[in-house]
Image (cartoon, rainbow, N blue to C red; front, top):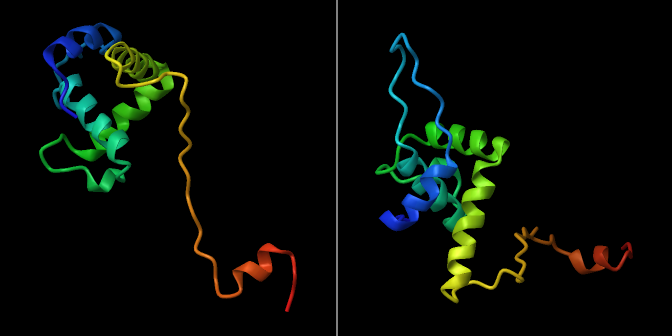
Length: 119
């Protein structure tokens, strides 16, 4: 998902980036916007981190930032802001709930097991 400049202008203040290291060691921190777009792509598609397209930053970097933002509440604030924006545009009903579901393929005779019967 690509964020518009207007969306990013509202989201950026919600992200508290750590201060730069005074010794200038280590790799430069990747831009929050590109990381957020990668995270939103994962959330939108439901794909595993290993399938993150190559045009995004490294998946380990994106996953680490996802975990960081999830722990400190940043991700919840961002998603709330985006959900409210979609609601105002009439593209989302905030009262709706979605449940992520998994399924398990039944083995031969699955109906018998489901009924609590044995062979």
